[in-house]
Picture 1: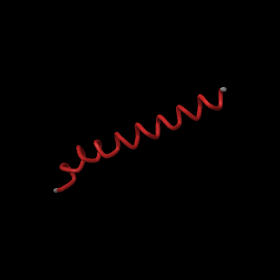
Picture 2: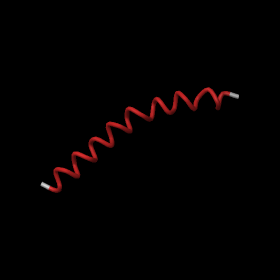
Picture 3: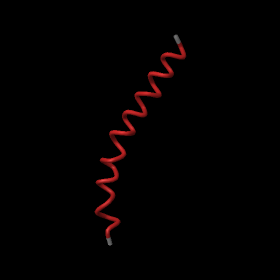
Picture 4: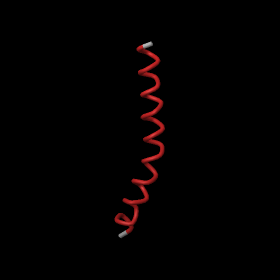
Length: 34
C-alpha cells in the first residue's frame, strides 16, 4: 500500500506542476520582454 501512496503523491505533484508552470511562466514573461 505504501507504493500506491507514493505513486499517488507523485502523480498529484506532476498534475500540480503541469497546472502551475504555465501560470508562473505567464507571470514571469512580461518582465523578460525588455
